[in-house]
Length: 259
Image (cartoon, rainbow, N blue to C red):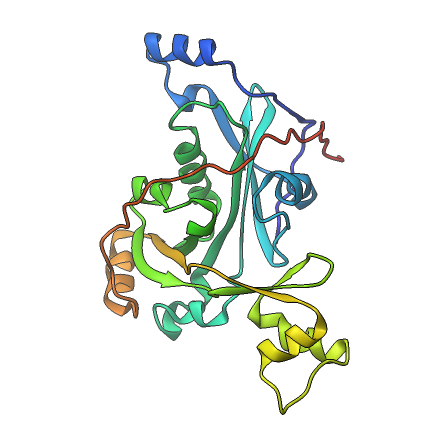
């Protein structure tokens, strides 16, 4: 379950470039600039719904963390149960209960170069012992997973849905929810394909690239060796393509934590 925070926090505007350059010149480490703490789930909502490219919060959040500069929040991150239950078996039944998905991570623009990798790595110590972390990089939003590569995650190929279903109102649905949605709206017909039913409903289908899938064994040396041995997925070479940026300029309003 999500942890509780116990202080009052506000959101910091982007760190000025001149300040970053000055820190680099005097050799200030990011660990002396930023701290990472657990936060309440509600503090992430605005960041995920308005600043992150997905524009929605995961429904299965277990752990939430904030990146802080002078006690002011400049980034948020969450872990939770994988949306695809089959991922729980990536290291067989033995480690089924050890899997957590790094579902979302977003920071303000203009932070130090290594701030994001520092943020992610500092959350490991708050996770349950011997956790398998799985995360995805979405090439449809210009991501190849270079941050995971820098943190020594293993690249295990491609996964995820290759299409999204766009409702007439503009809301997107994945394959997982389409049938249920069609039944609910009385557009389900066993004689037709899902795509045809969706077309009759007035929606559109958007074909997309599959996501890059990464895993990390946050475990003791002995357990990590066993996880490697049982891993069902093939470890592949890192993908190397040019990243592109999406608009993450939205600045969340001041957020507070209730005691």
